[in-house]
Image (cartoon, rainbow, N blue to C red):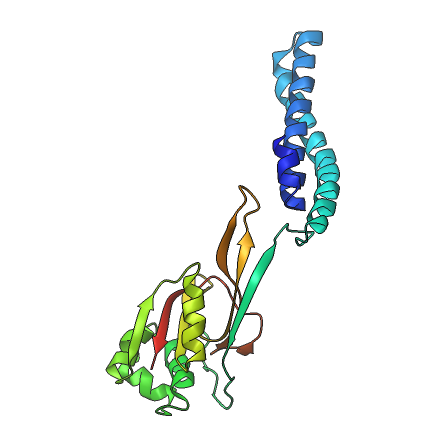
Length: 237
């Protein structure tokens, strides 16, 4: 029943759970068969492993096929089971002519602040790096305050709060955020936010999520498919 319930909402849960249940049953049957027929408890483990692997593959195929079809029938994404509604997009005009950071391992905050300051104080990355004492990983919010920039809020953002972030973006605020790059926080400028209600694959119900972003990355420039896992979000000006 658990398998059938999960298959309604997507391919992957149905495939994995179906395979694991069938695999476990096959493994127990194979293992106990060795014990009963051969009086050999040592072969129980190998029989279980073989049955589990076989059941996992067969269950994955059958569960995946049914899950794929069921996901399509309810309008969800067939491969992941994801279902979104009530999407809202908040864009800002993309800026041009901002130099990328020359060293990919440091100084992203200075270049992200230069992008944010374009059209405001028009100060350079070197100015902001100086305010940060040329530290390789200074916090952009602290540097902004030292530079006389108004910081409206600085915090982690999740769920429905992203609609407020998008609203601030539409009001002309500059939004900076950190994303993880090789395990190190990296500053980017958010230029578009799209939020949506997402169906919970397991358990049901809807939750408001950040669906997608566009960003200006000081290393790579404008990216239309930006990250959705962000922290230390700043609202400036």
